[in-house]
Image (cartoon, rainbow over all chains, first blue to last red; front, side, top):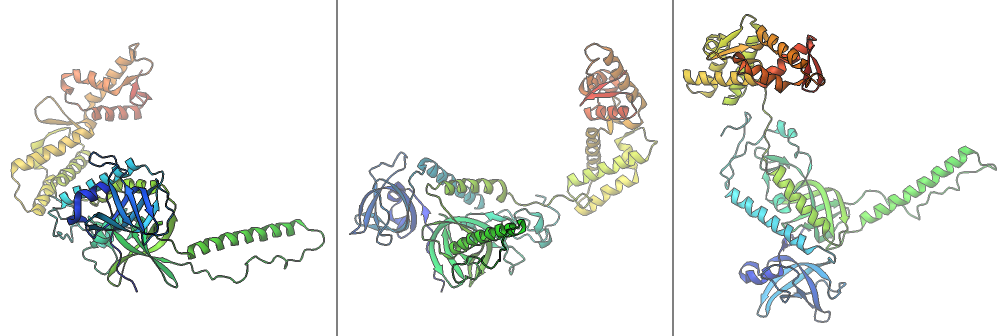
Length: 131
Length: 386
């Protein structure tokens, strides 16, 4: 039977997850992109580091990912991956329960985030016109 | 704000101040988005309401465009396989929607499937007809292989995380909105460039086309009771009147108001608008109409106050233009390529009588002279006379 559809994974930056915090994003489905720093197949965790180049993000921000649902995947350390999953804000910081993963090596991150910003601005503009 | 004439069903949405004029069903075909596979964000596909007035049809309204088909590109987040179809959930970052992708109904053959070409008995010497047949048989066999390969591919489900391009109609299945795919294809996109390009394209499409509400082209006949329509119809009527009444050489606006047929138009407009029009407004309507005629080149304003001259009946204008062209063509500067009509206009305007002549009038006169073979057009806009 047709189950309920999974939640829509809105595209966010890793730094935004840290910024926005748990009030807005806890339990929400998101799509993030980051460079794979560590990967432990036994414990099913991985860490994605920031690849954006905005002012308030640094390459040191790392997002922990629970990869139980996507193991085993072709995990090359240093490659850029996009993941969709639900966020959970634990005591140790935000954790992403990934359910989809895709390797996007070769992506133009600057263009990707620029287009994301354009899209967000368009939606914001639309909201302003409606209200 | 004046809307188009066919504002039959205009419903105002709860969160909108502006209400769009929704079209009756007969006019839907005029909207280019009606039967096109519209590239939309999935969020919009889910949020669109039914087109007001037609709750049963699967036609949805995006800012008064009637939309029934969509084109989507997104990640596959859920795969469900049934006997005859696949149900994929597509996520493009703004929303998730289910797509029903039907499996091809070709029956799978048993065995390898190669056409047995031993059936064709080849006599000793292969004639040209036979070899052509042989070639055709081989060609058919290879085509069959290709088709089988495609069918096999379509039978396999797309995996989670793949990018899927779907085109299909919006349907409602068990209360939930779905897309019944008429076309679906796996997109190989290792660097996300297709996704990025698609988002940029969609933003452009939204701003240029989807967000612009569809407006019916104005109907020409005097059904339009807005002011611009009245002036236009008045203009046409005056032009008609002038061409039929050949005795009219020049006129003043006040004289026009005495003509019955022209006043009738104003009266009709007044009745439709249901407002009182006083003499001053009538005068302004006529002035605007005559102004339009001036721009078209049918009349021009002479130096005597308020007197408009009909150029077709003004012999002196024609002869002076001809004189000017002849005179200027004598000069060495213009004797080869002719004079530009604007130069002729300048010369004409030095004459006190013709100071209010517009360029269109000159063009009109020159065309007339050319048809009478008095002037020759050397190239576009250049004229010469001998």
